[in-house]
Image 1 (cartoon, helix red, strand yellow):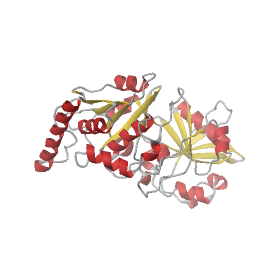
Image 2: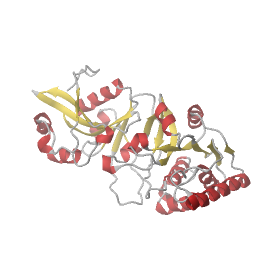
Image 3: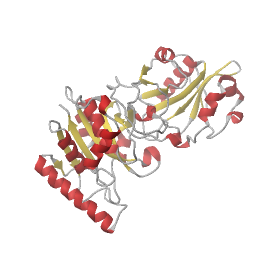
Image 4: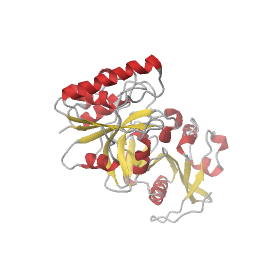
Length: 365
């Protein structure tokens, strides 16, 4: 157990390591005294190890007066409260103080047990519930809450979870257009997702030029630019021979389509400063679809599209259309997700010896 730290609310706290997969019988007596069995069962139902699980505890009554299970994706700038037990307001204050001490910009709270009133009293605002998705996999709690600890936060877009392992590019483009008012939220469903994916895919992934071309075809009034610092085919490192070549042919065809449609393909890397400038532009609704590797956040080096739509001090706020339920994630982890600048800069360089960055900038007007 760490030494308790004084916090502005005068509530001391300590950070205690979490035992992955431990059932209720393995928890400390101090915790079992204040947490119900259904809460402890949820905490121990999955292996949360990849997300550095920890307990933020508040002493009192000869043991713990309050505790919260806190997790977060690696490389990000937030902390998530799975549940707070015991003196819930004290637990929330302790987690916020812990987040501020760690220089995190955001705390989110899954709405498994907390009421809207208690969350609001602790300074948390309700999150918009996610749009209905096309997957039957559990999506987590019906409600969630957010509190920004740095900056003023960002405007909240709709959240939609991709229904396949390969349609992230299409979903991020659709979410950008929903936020821009070009697409109605209720029309974002599995049919819309897979229809746009079919237009953009390089089988099964969506490469940057093909995705930009599909966006321009679908929404001719939206300005689209592609940034890709290579003229070679991308996202094909896992393939060879004919399987690689026919996909390379399609990528060359996408470049020809971009030229015909007037979609600029900039043969240079979009810098992080340019990305921030794009999504910060006042009076504009600009979004950046960015290719990242999931190696840092999820532990496997798979290319994945996220939507960059806002900034706060030290971080870019993204929508990630996928989350890992096997590690205890829910939509609350993937929605309004602040990724530290340095982490985003590193995870958006893909490839082998030659690292490249792919991005699609959409200006919805």
